[in-house]
Structures are given as structure tokens and as C-alpha cells.
Image (cartoon, rainbow over all chains, first blue to last red; front, side, top):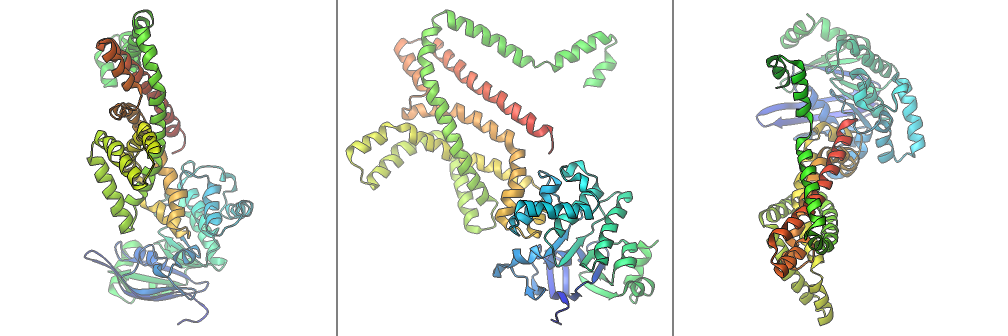
Length: 247
Length: 271
């Protein structure tokens, strides 16, 4: 299990919010370069699993290992691990008081201790990559939702993470802006970035995902390659869910 | 009420002059007129000598307001960080501080500072008589510190409200990039929070300006102190306290205009 190709190991993680068992003994591994897609009804624990990976939620029990390092707040390595794990949020969470450029440079300077000029150069090339180099001096509120999410992706990439986590990255977007974000994510996947994506974008699943995991009531119901899960789901719960979202 | 007033009034010229009247800051006009009248009567009549006497106190009023406010801003921020901290010790100490300081009247805090803390401190430090007298004579220092510590509790709650008004996702986004709690607070949360509470902070500056009048009770020679001296010397209570009120109003109105200006500048552009 701990071979060099494994980037994320989730081992027997449980998380409870009051009376809700959000995660119920979940285990999985993600290999280097793999794109794992997590689907499931709302409240099934998929976002919680994602947030447990970088300890935005601390699991009640079980362990998470990133690239050989166990994530553990007490050992004080939490910030180092998080710097290696990029995260993209549903509602972008750009820093509204900073320009696009400063949004991308802040953590580079504070966490990676890069000099400003180097951070800026890096930010420029990333903005080029996500297709909005001309917006570098704008403030987040001056951008469309799709542009904001692309900046958020660039901000996470600036840390040169080993893994990227996407928490429903397109569900707060207007329909016509979804594609521009998905295209950036597709490029990333094709470049070999290790990604865990919580989303119901079936097109992305078909084109980029190596593996799809279906969750319900905090448990992994089934997982497999997209073709198999979407076309020949094994469990009734999966069938029901897919029939509802695929129309 | 705007559009409905339009429907009811048939003559459009009447409504337009009516809305114009509504937009006019009438309170300001009245204030300026009254102010000019008062100023006129003051500068021509017997008020002149009263005013000249009281103005000496304005300096110490302004100085102690500015100093205690600056100190309160700094201490208040530290307390506020304790109030929002997940560290149990910091949270409880900060909450204890706020509850005590908010629960004791400022006047009592000032008396306590001057007549309990200062003598206690000089006993404890075993000061010689000369320094001891010097400390007691300079009650302004105890006064400024007392005011600042009292106001720090109010300001801490203002800061805290601002910090808690920032969406949780902002902290999460900063932490997910690997920033420490302190870095996230300093570079992400506080800049946004401060911008939001700037008007409230400004109001407390106006309030502290007025509350410097409490310093008179521990014999700090500020504006109210001079007013009381003048009144007991001349028995002209009406005139003296009119003059004092006029001077305070001048100070606070100037500040109020300043706060409005800052408010407009920060809420106008980007968020």
C-alpha cells in the first residue's frame, strides 16, 4: 500500500457531525497522476472526505497520508502538507481585498518564501495558462465567476502542489462559464496532475477520470473506471442516483 | 416613500422642491446657523474671556483622547484576537477582561487607576518621595491608561464582530495554501475585517473624545476641569458651560465629518 506511486492514502477515516455520520470507515488510495472523481447525493460525505484529506476537517479516527507523511496537526506538519495539496472551492474564496496578482503571490511569498519578482513571474505564467493574463491587476469582484474560479486554480497551482483537490468547482457557476473551468481542469489532468474531484460533471468524468467513486451515507458504495460505474453500476443505490442525474 | 410622494402630489415642481428639501442635510444647516450665532455672541460679548480661559484645556483634552485611543486600538486588537482564539487560555483571559472592563463604569476605572494602582505601584517599586509626588501630580498618565484600558474592551468587541463577519471560507482558503493561522489572520482576515468596522472604530474615537471629560475627577487639567474652575470662580454657570459644550461640539463634529469621509472612501470603491 505504501509504494512510491501512492500519493494519498486514506485509512479507515470516520467523521461525525452531531448525529450525522459524515464518514463511516472510509479507506482509499490515489496513485500519482490519477484522477479520482467522487460522486454521490448531497450529504453523502464526499466533500467531507475531500476536506479530511488536507485536514480542513480533522477526522475523528483514522489517518490520512500524503506522499508518505501522515497529516497530523499535533506534529506541526500541517502547514507543510497543506502547501503541497492545492484546493479549489465551490465558491472560489479569492481574497477580495487583493488583486488577482496578489492573490496568487501571497502564499508563494508567505509560505514558500519566494521573492516577490519570482512569485510574480510564476503568477504571470499561471495566468497565461488559465487564459486570463490581462486580468492580473483586477480585483476578484470585477471578474466573472468562471474567471474567478480560474484564478483560484492558478492560486492553488502556484504552490506547485503534488495533489489538487476540487470541491464542486463548477456548481456555483453560470452554465456558460462551466466549460472554461472544465477545460483548465482537463489540461491539468492531461499534464499528469494527481486530482481528486468532487463533481457531477459527467463530461469531465468520461474524458479525464481514471476512477469514479460513488458515496452514500458516509460510505463508499462502489468504485471503478467511469465506463463501468456509469454504464454497468453494480448497486441499486448507484443505479437510482445515476438515473436521476443523467436524465 | 419617494415614489409614492410623487403619485400623490400633482404639481411636479412641488415634488421636486420637496425631494430637494429632503436631500438637504437640514440638521447641518441648523447646526451651522446656530453655531455662527453662538460664535458671534461669544466673540462679541462676555464669552470671549471665558472662551480664552477654557481653550487652554482643549490641548490636554485632544492629547489625552488621541493617546488613549491609540493605546486602546492596540490593546483592543490583542484582546479581540484572544476572543476569537481557539486557545482556551487566551479566550478565557480575553473574555474575562472584556466582561470586567465593560461592567465597571469608566469613572470608577479612572478613580481606581489614580488612587489604587498608582499608589500601589509606587509602594511596590519602593519609590522615593520625590518620584512618588511626581507620579501623583501627573494624573494625566494614569487617566490616559485608565481610559485606554476601559475602551480597549469596547474596541475589542468591535474588532471581534468584524473578524467574525468574514466568511469562514476565507480562513479555509488561506490555510489550505499552507499559511499559518497567524499569517492568514494578518494578511487575509484582518485587512477585510478592519475595513468593515472602520466606521464603528471612528465612532468610538468620538466617544473617547467626550469621555476625556471624566478625567476632571482625577484632576487632569483638561477642558471640563477648566470649565469647573471658571464656573466656581465667576459663578457664571450658564455662560461657562455653554462655552464648554460649544468647544466639545466643535471637536466632535469635526471628528464626525472625518469619520463620514473615511466611511465614504472605504465603502465606495472595491469591497
